[in-house]
Image 1: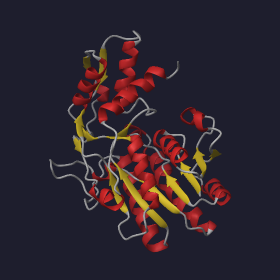
Image 2 (image 1 turned 120 degrees about the horizontal axis):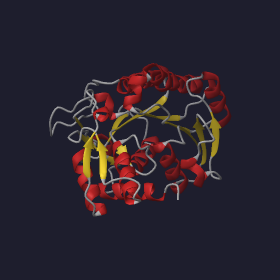
Image 3 (image 1 turned 90 degrees about the vertical axis):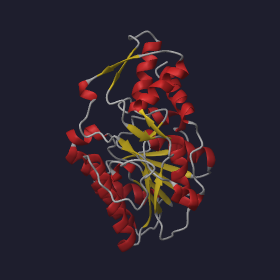
Image 4 (image 1 turned 135 degrees about the vertical axis):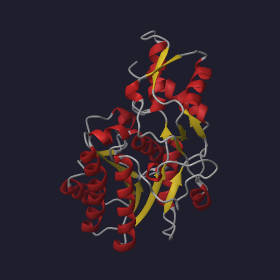
Length: 319
């Protein structure tokens, strides 16, 4: 079986490549914007085939899909950082929305019918207004930032291409996920990197933080990509939209406390005004019962293990 992963060099894409290589015997192809940036894939360089491709341009996408003729496409490529979506809103939509349309149109032009797992986001739902009322797949999207709006557009476009163009699409809506290799502008990775810098005596025992009261539903990225694979294998049923989340809700303050328990160190906090964002969602959490009932997926990695592994990643990175 031939597998094509867009955004294979990124955080989730590289973990998905790890999972497929470790658990399945397949030919794996990957799309990257810059094939020179393979830090996350260096251990797999002899097991995957990479294509340099700007997904916002149709012809390179068409050429890659025609050459690889994939049985499964995992579409993970995109701009994923919420603050950047405000600064570069047009580019965010160009990459996320036009890039997705190019994937679909290239599949149509090649006259093939691969299973396409389209990754959108739990961010499409917006604020979770109280517990235990968690977002389900029937919740009405209420995006509150350009990134979420772009992913809502991707979600609706994917539904359109499935219903009216006949593409074999499954939509995954992952909530917050973290783990090793995540960029340090995301909170769990940011905190871990700062802690390791303190550990190496490169800085004072003080963490630079923003809103520590915000709460999120966190899942380990390795559980998330396992869910993507499972979604690629389900039968083509009417139910084709699935939340991926853990139901485990943590405030940033609680994550800091967990890091303190893991490391045995105490940190003072410096709340930086630039990290306080007026558009921050205070609570975002989801219900994953649909995917659990359909394929039996549920998170397996304890969150403390995830945090430990992020610390270890930053401890060894660059050594």
